[in-house]
Image 1 (tube, rainbow, N blue to C red):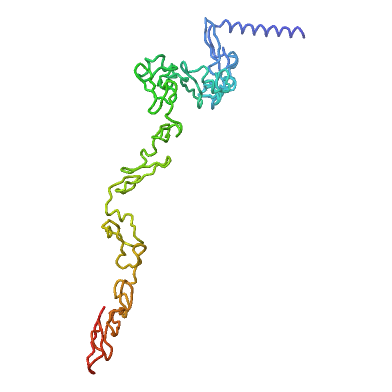
Image 2: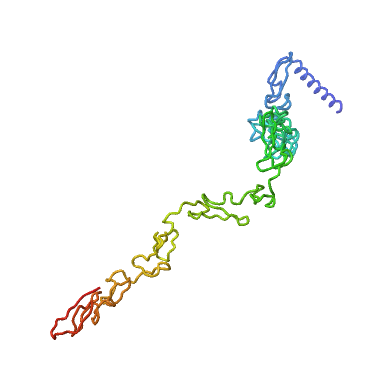
Length: 406
C-alpha cells in the first residue's frame, strides 16, 4: 500500500514538472498564460505577466482592482496615492501648522498669531521681530505700529529713514545765510550768542551781532540791565518806573489839549480854563451851547444859553409850556393847558383850574364866573364901570351895566 502511494506522488510531480517546463519554455502569450485582470507581454522572447492599470496582486493568478486611479476618483479633499484615497494633509505639515487640501494638494500655513516655516514648524509671532533685523536705513529707529515696522530718523538726523538718515549739517556753508551749523543742526546763531535781555541780529557769514535794546544798558554778550527796577531808581523829571523805563505818569495819560498835574504819582487831567470837553479824550474851545451840556437846570426844565445882568454868558432855565415850578429845582406838569380842561365856572390860569374872578373886577363890583370867564357887574343901586369902580345911583331907574373879563 505504501509503494502505491509513493508511485502516485512521483507521477503527479512529473506531470507538474512537464507542465511548468512547457509554460516556461513557451515563447508566446496565451489566454491561460496570466491570471485574471493581468496582461501578458513577450519580453526578450519570453512571456511576462503584469497586472492591468488600476489593479494589484499576483499577475499569474489574480489582480484586484485598486480604490482609485487618480484624485478625481476620490471624494472631498482626499487624494489618490498608490491606488488608495488618503488625506494628503496627514503628516505633511510642521508643528502648529494648518493644512488645507486643494485639488488633492496639501497647502501648509501658519495660523494667525504664528510665524515660521509651516513645512517644518510654526511658533507664536512676536511683532518686535519685524524690526530684527531692522528694515530701515542707517541712523534710524524702527518701531512696530499695528504690526507694521515704521522707520524714523534718530534725533539730530534727517533724510529718508528707509534708505538712511544723516546729520542736517556738518558746517555753516550747508545752512542758509542767516543760520549756522550748531550741533549738526542749522540754527539761528542768536539762540546762544547773546546775553540776558539782549537783542540779536544775524549778519553775513552766519554770525550773530548782539546789542542792548532801548533803555537797557550793559554788555550785550553777557547781560543788559533795565534803566530802573523801581521808582526810587528814577529822576524827579521821570519819577515812575514802567517795565524798567523811567517815565512821567502824565505821558499819554490825558487827552488832546488837556493839562496834566501829578499828585504823587497819579496823573490828574483837566481842560484849560477857556476850554471844555473830556480831558481824557480831547479839550476844545468853549461854545455857548456848552453852558447847557450837561443841563444845569432842575428836573423837566429847559436850558438855553443867555446872559446875566453883567452881560456875562450863563445858562437860563425855564419850565416848558404846560409845566410850573422852580426851573432851577424842578418843573411839574400843570393841571391844565386850556380852559376846556376845567369846569365851566373855572378857567385855566397858570396851568391850574381856578376861579377866574380873582381881583379882576372894580371897587364895589360883583364877579360871576361863566363859561370860564369872569363877569363883572355893578350891584343893584350902583352904577359905573364894573372893571374900575361902581358908584351909588343918583337916579332910581338907572340901567345896570355888565362887563366881561377874563
